[in-house]
Image (tube, rainbow, N blue to C red; front, top):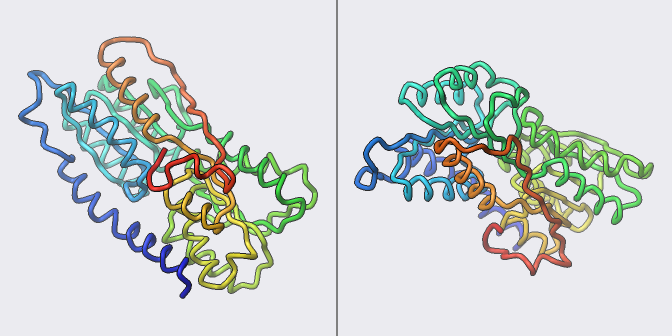
Length: 323
């Protein structure tokens, strides 16, 4: 096992067990704000698609800090990428009497009924990170420019690779994943030398991407590049490649510019990633929540710009934390 792979394996184990600790905290809604709550405090319900991605933890910190400052309460639930569980948890929060629901849909097509129910109960809905199919139900949708992120990486990829046999790692039921993949493919489609040899659905999860990449290697598929819809998948891919001694032959591209991905870019084990800004998304979401509660008008859709991170500029970003 190489030194680089040991580093990635440590990352893998940390992320694998992270949901256990986060879920334990989510069951009890995080901190106890009871001593700081104002009279007639409002209840904010939160449901991200999963809590094993640090992106959501950072985003949520911005919201929970503002909720604490306002003397309100927050309840957080983790559906762990299960849409039926997400629906059940939102039902539970509606019974608790939430005033606002912050949600990242596990499946962008499957929450229409429960969100319509929330609207009939007078609940404000703030969607973060990925879109809904029926976005009219949301009071505000706040995401990174997901299509633009894929496009940005795709343009860089096309500049660096005139010919390539490419594997694409996807998350097929998440609109953000679909948009990123489509943006990437649209950016490279005019290059006749770039061929997609396989698409692999990995749900954007390291623990799924790694074994599926190992399977592709064992199948004998000929490829020299991998585009991943996010950096969790990219880290899993990089680990699989390193285990098979293929890191120097295969280029890996992702989206997020997570601390792990930036470290791999610096080491030369990833080529590029499009930086998302979870703190900024969280700040906008927090501001939006309290504008809605105060009866103010908010923008229906907010797209947060992304930036390309490569080995040439990675030092401009903080490698040990999210930007």
